[in-house]
Structure formats: structure tokens, C-alpha cells
Length: 28
Image 1 (cartoon, rainbow, N blue to C red):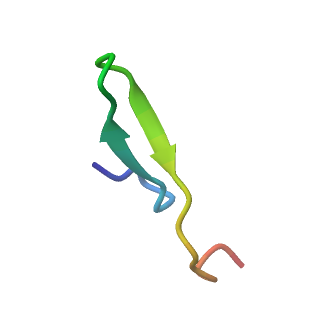
Image 2: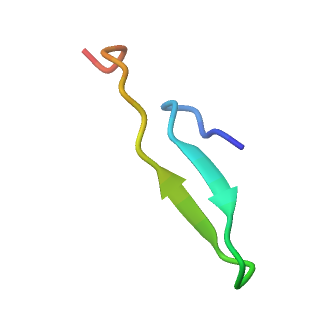
């Protein structure tokens, strides 16, 4: 899923959500 500032997450093997670094310049 993604949060409101565009960080993407995936659910890891332990059930925890991990941040996926994404390359975007939309945070100016």
C-alpha cells in the first residue's frame, strides 16, 4: 500500500510492513 506522501510498503514474511524506497521528486 502507499501512504499520503507516496511511500510504498510491502508486507514482509514476519507480517510487518516494510518501507519500499521509491524515487520521486514529488516532495518539493
